[in-house]
Image 1 (cartoon, rainbow, N blue to C red):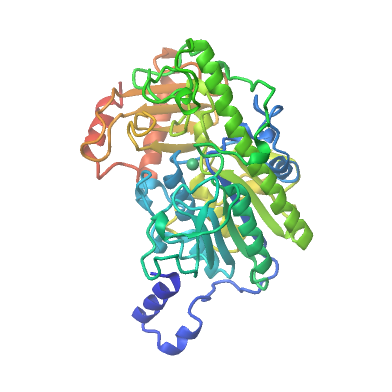
Image 2: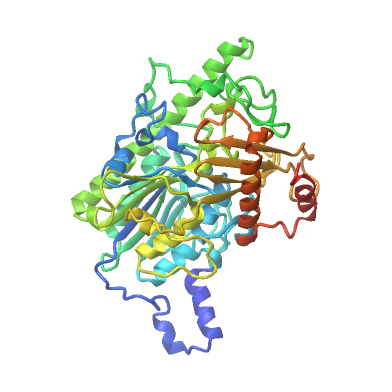
Length: 527
Ligand code: CA
């Protein structure tokens, strides 16, 4: 059902007559003509780790600079501690669109979907008088009907010759069929790399948009998600150089626990079922060290070539805004749906609560509010994105959202009662990349993770051994040493467990539907 139709039905139910249906959509709670409200350009890529952005200053910053993304940092703010509530595509996107944790919005894993009536952020910002568009990777399986315009990839979409579905256009050969996520129902669009195509579409929409209203554009790249395919013009990038390797690719002195030893897909040949050397066609007969080195180099080069295409296309978007004369009237945000393990701890993919997967890049440029070159290390969660975007649009956060606006942090003034900890949960026990299910809490100084190791649905992968891990992030930012059993940290563990319990209760993350998980939590809480 389209958004207009559902609103019409809602109005009918509420007893509005046919006369009021002539303009059913803009029942704005804020004046649509308010000229002071900024445009909001929300740019999100897929699996782009913060440490693969120059401005974050990691080992990759020098070899793989990202000048256009870095410009957002030098002319705006870089947020150092933004974390996702669930480090995998569909749930992270659902949290961003709803302002809710997974147990509240019901999107726990990649099988989840978001019905139009639950697409709260675009609906509310549209009601506040914005013209809205969703362009690129959507991955929430139901029609993005709440947007004025959409043009989206089916599921993951293709890197080359992507096909997309555009709002209002009949799908070739499937006219009249419902929306669901079936590639055959999408019309062919273009013949170039997806990052270029998605930007072409956004630029076209920006040119043709309703300029009487501020805009909210969600511009979502597919890149640099696997299987990594870069634009042809980047084929030779990094050709004659070695990408720096993380120390933890080789050395793991006291990392992990009984719950995680040997788990997770690897760069090296450690995981015999799935490792990056297999994906990158490395000679399976090479000795361990050479195999790992080659797998890592091929992995990072392909990934960083995709990042280069993202960065260039962000440059195109900035150029357009500058030419139209609206660069400073537009809040420009850049983020990714979660991070990515780029060989740290010999891991590939995301899902883990470890830093490189948990952290989302987040940069914002809006000179009318944000001081150039500022940074903040306040703890922010992606559940906070929708309330923040709504506040920027002059709209209130509804009571059913669980996040909080960080506009004060963007202004450089952290409220005294700003949260000191964030909650994380990964549900997909041993799916795809062999990660045991877990949850945990992270503060500025510490991270405590409980691997409960159970599938939430009956059946599925077998349970794995539960276990706790504690990392001292100030002394050990790369999480090389699990301190959970160190008696010196007993008090820290006690305090973090209390905070973890409090956050789970506060956000309704108490597993009421999953007694078999609650049982394991109860049994192992004090172990
Ligand atoms: Ca993703």
